[in-house]
Length: 168
Picture 1 (cartoon, rainbow, N blue to C red):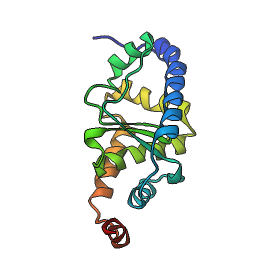
Picture 2 (cartoon, rainbow, N blue to C red):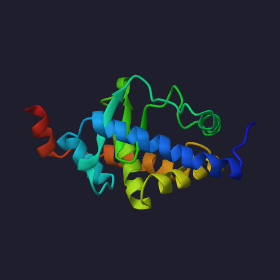
Picture 3 (cartoon, rainbow, N blue to C red):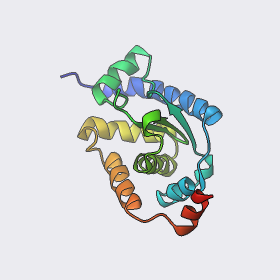
Picture 4 (tube, rainbow, N blue to C red):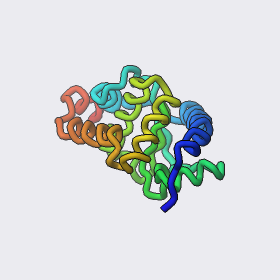
């Protein structure tokens, strides 16, 4: 089985950061802001600035096109045909067939809160990818946090005020 060595990781991390920043910029330009209930869910997920989040509906999450990033992605399996959502700081790709999946959205909001907590793209990717390499996906602690938090938040009823706003 192929392995992403520490040396290779250090080489691809700057490339991954550029890739993530470029796509975040695209999502922020073309994506849509959150609904009131989504803003509430993002706050519950720990996002400090949920108004900055934009969602972009796509047929599939675009994989990296740089050969070194492709190789690293094949090992880590971050972006696959099965990937339903991908958070790049405040920009979030959501696959079109999952657009209304609240649990997925909340999961991605938890990742945005992790970006905020860690200080941005480089810090998040460095930690997250290292965890994926060490523990495997989805056993990585940051991924487990997103899974656990989304289950917890989505098991709570939606606030009546939010339900009223949706009926209008």
